[in-house]
Figure (cartoon, rainbow over the protein chains, first blue to last red):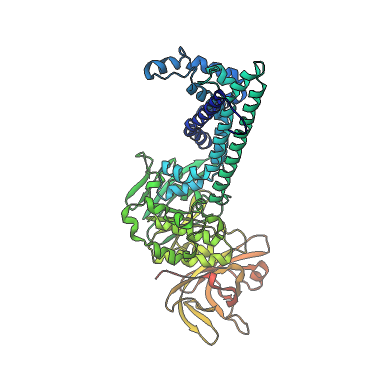
Length: 234
Length: 365
């Protein structure tokens, strides 16, 4: 970049942050849509508990969420140990672990707008599709999902933005390893801990602002296009 | 043929209905809250009955005793909602073709072009539902249901949200579904003129139960007071035959054993059976044939019963000569002054100007 002269290490932090945020968003999106649909449309025992669990990372201190992830998914954790032993998947102190932490933190922000947009769809549109011969999966794919698209986009962008800036849970769960788990936020934090780090922190701050702003603009554009395609759903 | 016998309790509302429909249109008639829409939802498979059996053309759709419940998408029963419920994200064309995509190959009997032509929606195909008027939306909704190749079409007050001009536009289309596409229809309505015009049979619902069922003349003949909202909507239905047209005065002559009914304008081909809906407030009673009066229609009959209370008005039901019944509203004072009583001979006078095309329905030949 010509305007801001980033060092190789800083570039690594930026691309790593993007990779983690994109992975966290894309991997959690199908589950987020499913959860939003279940909470919006189904009645089942334990719904309140599930709703609470999803929202928990929003109200807990991020360090607590990160520590719980460490307990669960650490090398000797309840889920981490079998994952490593049988599937060879290690999350702790890896960028994939950072993506998991970001996904957990961003999940409530993703589910909420999707759920709201599904709730605003007249159920009788799905009924109408049913009487026209569409089975449940088809009703979802052809009616519910396209109509909920604006909410899905908002949810994905919010999750992405949260993932891009996540700090507390990530640094607790996967530490701050340059090249592996050092995101923009962690790199800025590191700069603030060393003498003469101000210039580096400022450079990454500007990059951070640019990325967040870019995400907002992209979401606005996609939403407008989606709304125009649906042409006023009232 | 659809046969329904089902019960369902939702909160404080208990529905328990049983009726059958073969060809043609069966009307589910009753006030709002009588259970009409719930009955429709049971047939469509959108609600599950607590107890009951629903059979369509020898296919058991629901049998609670045998644990059978066919989901809505495998019933091949079309549903036209009161508010159309078109898919807002799809064009009119995509809406029309939605059901066709899921329909089995043998459902292709109904041609797309013929449906588009009949419904007059050829110019709308590339539009989105948000840019259609209420009448246009309803026409597209009818086409969408029809093109899925249904074995039965359910229509849930499809005209209720339209103004009277749009209604007159859509009514003949529903008649053509019956006459040209030969789809049996269960038609929900609380408007007696729609029911009398479209249906061969009528099932009257009240508080979740079947109050009466049978042919339109039998059931609605003397306009049950039970399901009229006010004295201004109390009506009767009589059947007659289009006998001829008086071209000099532009009047249509309808014959009935009790007398000749004159109608302003033309009303369909000569020889057709028609139903005439007359409001109880539009009928004048006379003890003698009318002289020196402008009224042209005079029907002879005898009084079957007089319903009156302490109020100023009384409802007089008249057995017409030949067949049919009429109900007329008069003041209690008039009844006493004319010494009207059960069995008395009377003439029911109907002003021709009180009848219009909305009140006359041609019956399927």
